[in-house]
Amino acid sequence: IIRIAVIGAGPAGIFGAISAAAQNRLAEIIVYEATDNPLYKVGISGGGRCNVTNHCFDLAELASNYPRGYKELRGPFSRFQPRDTVAWFAKHGVRLKAEEDGRMFPATDKSSTIVDCLLETARHSGVRIRLGARVKRVGRLDTDTDTPEFEIELQDKTLNQFDRVLLATGGINQGHRLAKNLGHNILAGVPSLFTFNIKDPRLEGLAGTSFQDVKLTLVTERGKNLEETGPLLITHWGLSGPSVLKLSARGARRFHKLGYQTELIIDILPGLSSDEVYRTILEYKDKNGKKNVHLRSPFVIPKKYWSRIVDHSGIAGKTVWADLTKEAMRSIASELTSAKFAITGRGEFKDEFVTCGGIDLKEVDFQSMQSKLCPGLYFAGEVLDIDGITGGFNFQNAWTTGWIAGMSMAV
Image 1 (cartoon, one colour):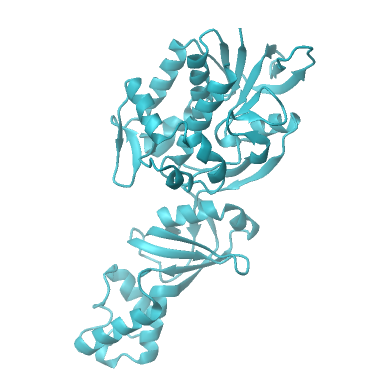
Image 2 (image 1 turned 180 degrees about the vertical axis):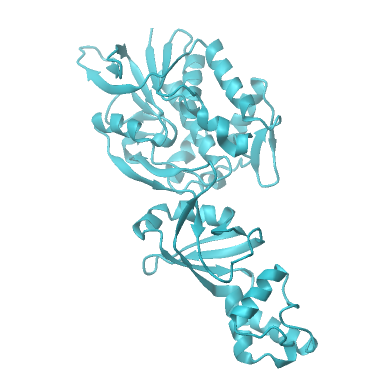
């Protein structure tokens, strides 16, 4: 009988345990969780609705949503992707629904549906979950057999021996410390999914104003600027929205290196060049000479933001289009296509806080999720240096790597 220890009762750990039990009904599987709250992150995610996965079934497109891990995950996704996640939950009595932006939630809109499903399936599969059981040490035992063996020591000094160990502690230091003691290199963790703190008169009082499609350019090292497109939202503290969150994830380590202080360039008309915008403004001026510049815009953008950038360009409140100078029109065109803002810090994104960093991916065999350095040791979820953008992708990483690790270590 194979004895398997899973360290961490998060989504990757519980799903890995379930997968192992399905692969080998005779395996003895124990999950160790330091807290009294298994699947805590699942319960609070998505505002209590749980963004289980994303309705993205194209493997190349799916992998592109992972700033770190996109190359390594393409193989695993060919074996277990969002389509398989949907099918797995349906088989276990939970229907998932897709929203317009691709995010998928349980049809009940309750994260407890997912938590209950996973815990009930684990229980029926014979998986034992020990709560309040903090693992202090994982050590290798000297053995003359081909089967590697491990000794796990808990905080209360209890010792237990296992044939396989799955490390699925999430992005916390405890799991990284255990992996490091077994010879693994740990890449330092830094925040990966956050909003931008920006103090600028052009944004003041406009919280809640949104743009459907913008292009953001993050100024970093010379010649290595990062770009991202998508919806943008003005907030009380600066900027948020999918474009910001994607950019923060892709540039996580660069942001950290810059101390979260750099320049952001915003193009709210990404389909038009600055010259095309200028010509549109010029044509509008010729046809609407008597109209107030602050109140009339040639573009479909929020009226309050239009008025703010007109004001920022030094144009008085009662100015009509006929009195607009070429210099003023150039200034407006520049504000629409390349407005510069100073990022002064970062903010967290609700309860979806994610970090990059973790176990070096070069030290993991992604066909089995087994360590290349320590046979019998497996990894799943955010303990690895993998993180996805918002939209259910971090959970999908947990389901995929947990499923593969479970299937592999139970044989």
